[in-house]
Length: 165
Image (cartoon, rainbow, N blue to C red):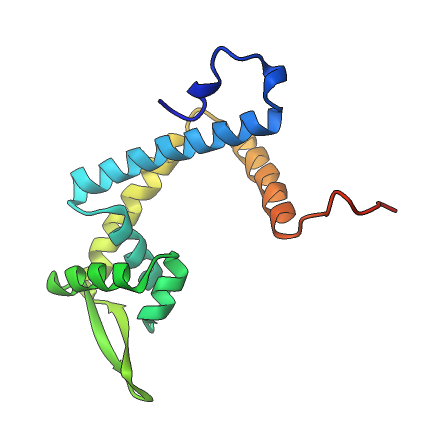
């Protein structure tokens, strides 16, 4: 059962529209993520965390230290280490020593990793475009703009107890 389904049978007055919107957004996110995970598994025999790690490395041609990867992916260092070990074993990433820090190394995509990530990223883009294919370009732009306002407000919230001038 998705998060929205729990509201079925209740009247809108029982739940503020903002809550209903939040649950709709969560449901959509979960549905799209489920499709992406299935596509990565079925088409590339990989997982979303592996894709995410490779995406971070693709954006950084000099590679990233493990702690940077962990911070960017918002997961523990142990999670990053396990995924990195798998990708190294498959020849998709490499560890490169950091000259000024003997304890650290950078993780970089190999040429094989770049090729494979490129294929996955192309498919990923197509899955996302398909997920939003029920909307026209104007609706997508409007939704993007409105969610941008939500994001901005979340980053810079207004204290409701403050008096407005």
